[in-house]
Length: 124
Image 1: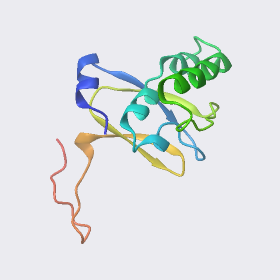
Image 2: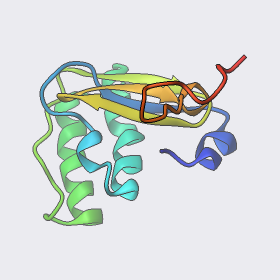
Image 3: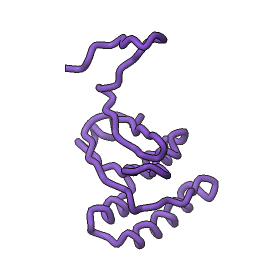
Image 4: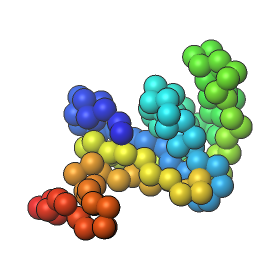
């Protein structure tokens, strides 16, 4: 889950998601929140998706910055063709299925017991 203070201090943030099946953008790093948050909000990739920077330039910069910050142990080749940017203005979790990622707002998460019965009331 992304830290609520990150969103609250900025009002909203833009995040990068993989829009199709295959290799997820940041979900590969869900066990390392520092890496995942850095990848979700990496500005040169956001700029490239939004047309303000060449994607090859952004991906080259991404690889160099990633290596400098986290080292070889984490770097997995990433594809850029199916990335998209979404703006989020509240606490969220990145969900993933077979590489396709989407945002789930924390307030919309439901808790279920072992019988599949929802234990929380829907948000209003």
